Length: 400
Ligand code: PLP
Image (spheres, protein in one colour):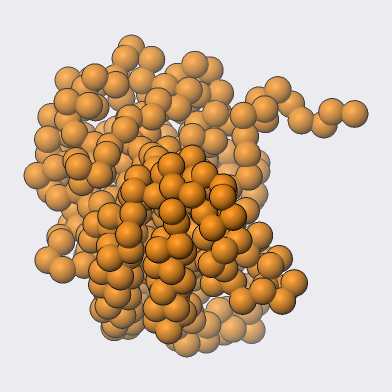
């Protein structure tokens, strides 16, 4: 018996979730595996946010809400965009969903016609191609190698656009590379988009507040307001406020686009969780100190991991401008032999070797469309990060 519809054929479960699950299984079986595969810092959700959720439940905010989110949360989202990005949206330009992930998914379903192309700079967040394909679109992957700072160059964008192009999905700071686009980088891409008026841009800003050194976050509508009628700006509370499990994200963009996405949400989910919406309202409008504190902690963890991995023989690790991943090249271990004589042919082989021989779980670059690399999440506890780096180093040194 086959259950899956034909459109499900190319769809696979998220590789990072699979890698984390495998690591959890090994831990349950008694192995001391360190998982650097998920992308979920060890910080708790702030106390004021949890208290707001409890109060909301006690007040009876446990019923259906408006399908696009509660008016109070949407007003807080509007204020966030004004305060942090200098952007002005009306409430009917904003939709709140169960995570940025669902916002992006609805955007694809709402706009992509069969055969429409979705440009995805690689390396990319694993879900983008699958979302485009579920919407009957065609992902067009554009390689952005390490020597271009993992960033999409205007000439590469120009070359990728065809009459079928519907979207460019841009994510800065980027998962998995940590690359950030400056205002000047975005302006150069805007220049290309101006020549192609049918192309929409999705600006995935979920790591906006997780930026390092002197990198200044910028978003497309702020840089190129003339493109506002074809940009969907996506953000959420998951990463900024350590609220990944609460599932609240939001999108802001052209009224007609948002209206279609809300119609979809009203049929598919009715509304995002009422209690999580109350929690997100507090996160966005309450004290913000936690954001800078956690950013500073993550910056120290980035320094620790990037420097240490760069010294491992066979790896070459850059310093990301944001997010909480490094994406070192592992070109130097390809074709080498493990102690049991297996030849490492791909980054997938290398990730497997690290799991089997070093008890460290990382995700191979093949999952993100750019090989040979591994993605290492550095958002965990520093002692474990140090131990994991030591293990990776020993595993690299054991190769012949
Ligand atoms: N976009 C990117 C680039 C991400 O890495 C993630 C989560 O890992 C998301 C979106 C989804 O975030 P949310 O938890 O808000 O659905």
